[in-house]
Length: 109
Image 1 (cartoon, rainbow, N blue to C red):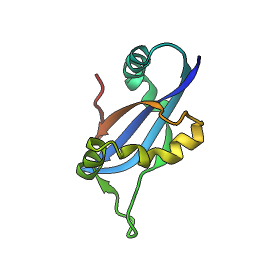
Image 2: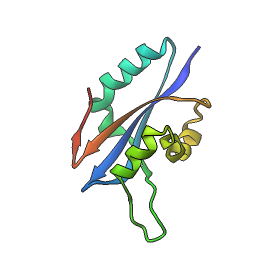
Image 3: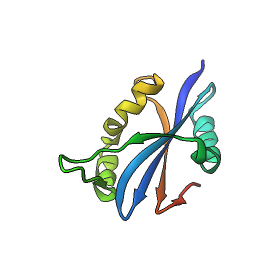
């Protein structure tokens, strides 16, 4: 059965998450295979990724990566991606690969 999977990039500049970028695929197979595929495509996908706004406070200040990391450790970072999930029509528990891009450098495995 095919599933929509996503490569999501956190664009981090000076310690702030300034935007998200996303590339989607539709694949079948096991989760391990899909994750390996997404990781293998991370650097190649980045230039064609679709840009999404990242969270900001009422003053327009972006979230720090430290705060994002705290949310991620608690499994709450998925809430930040709701607009992305709706745009691509993913399943309730989507398979994603999150790649940080820190000051222009892609950190992929």
